[in-house]
Length: 354
Length: 76
Image (cartoon, rainbow over all chains, first blue to last red; front, side):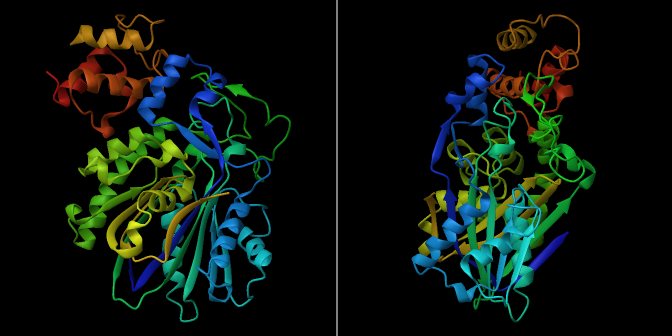
């Protein structure tokens, strides 16, 4: 599905990273593989360190810390917020929406919309698209988009498929109307027939958590996990990404009538370095234009990965200038989405620790 | 080329005999992470870049399929 938006902009990005740093080597002993094999994998996938939230720390805590930072530093006014979006797979509760909890924490005005969206790897793009649509309303001038996930408690430490890459993080993106005429091109696709390729089998209403679902089981590759843990069909997800993402990007550029050489950055979701490099080669863009260092330094934090990528890698450069950037997310759902837009002259673009 | 491929596979999983005419994937001799390590080693040894779209289990199921994949991606 192709989408087009007029006169909208991102005016600031703040990424919030848990201060606990875990090294790949510190967790190798958990895996049912030789150290030599694990280290080879580390090199190929680009695993190094990842950020893990403290015990009991929720996605909303990271968002509240970030919002407090913005309020305290005069970067955002409470009265300005017309919509509060929380995109996550790790809400505080089944009910109420976590966005309402955050609204209540700060005592924000009631004349606003709070909205939770259950999305993962493409959560930044889905959140931006939703923000742009909300901004079509006369009464909505500023949207606070929060992408946050604390999924590490749901990942088995003995699962080499998922544990080395998981990272907890949040990002707050301010999206608003722009006085400068501009066009944003986007597209989104979904394939629910493969929805369970990435899942946490137990814990919802379909299969509530129980002592049985907490039983650890070994898979064919020697990983141990329970039904309470996140499970990923790595081969299927990799093949889906390689099959669907390059044509999506080519289509987006074609619709926008933009040559890929004119795109400054391809800021993509980062499951692992191997996949990113293969994607850059398939799309035929220099690997340097598609940073792959977020999973290496912080881990894959689902929908927060792309804004963390922007704030960490482009930081101050986007405060005084603008760049044409192609964003893309792909994964849980299955969902894949991309956006081509100018991002720059931001009021803030940084990462903070929590 | 075949000898080099067998040598790489044997270093990756020394517990298996890759000279046998069996399906490496179905027999559990290579898992998905082995395939990624294998791609990295093959690219380095044969100075090629294997297309991501070709990183499919069936392309790594035998010495012949790996050889065909390498040739398709320009290895000589």
